[in-house]
Each structure stands twice: as C-alpha cells, then as structure tokens.
Image 1 (cartoon, rainbow, N blue to C red):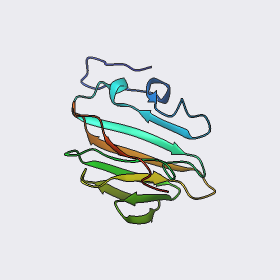
Image 2: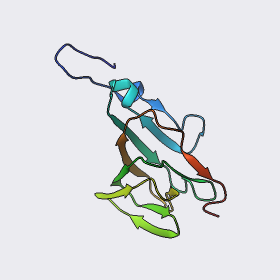
Image 3: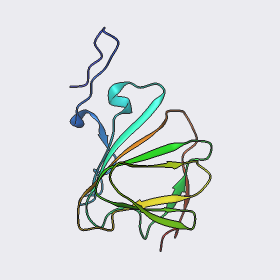
Image 4: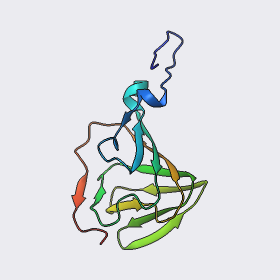
Length: 134
C-alpha cells in the first residue's frame, strides 16, 4: 500500500515496512517505516516486544554521533544504558546520545510496544559489545 501521491505526502501500512525481527520467530516485530515512506531525514520504527524478549543476555550496541529516542506506547520495557538499569512505562521517552552502549528487554508477562526515532543518515553500522547484559 506504500504510496507517494503528488500532494506532498506518503503513506505506509504495517505490511509495507521491513520487519527486522522476521528472522527471529517468537520475538515480536520491529517494523522500519523509513524506506516504505521514502523518508530522507527521519528514521522511524515501531517495535512490538513479546514477554521475555529483547536484548537481555545478548550484546549491547551504540550509534556514536547519532541520537535516538525510544517512546514506550504500552507495557513496560527495561533499559540497560552503560551500567544503569531502569524500567520505562507507557508515555515515557528515553533519549540515547550514542555515547553509551545500550540494550532493551521486556521483563514482564505482557506485550510492550515502542516507537524508535532517529535522524536518517548514512552512518557507520552500530558498534556492538558482546556480553553486555549477562
């Protein structure tokens, strides 16, 4: 359904957005809308995290020089940023500066949903740190 009418806007349905989590059945979805919308400046993803899923026990990552904002729509998500661990609930925004390694996880028994925004740029791939969140 992705379209680019002459009126100066574009529309993308969920099915038009690439699902980063498709290769990980049982982990939910992370739909990247930027290509489907044809954005030039904004990167935008919607993430649906099933209970017990996310980065715990995995690697942390960061995007040096790139700011990201996570907005919790529903549920509660646990963030690990550097050595800090905290929970964020609905209508809470968390800004990542790109300086610290981070990871997110859904530690609850309920689904959580997030919006993730950043500038869209041809930056280097994220830096990863294995064993970040044992």
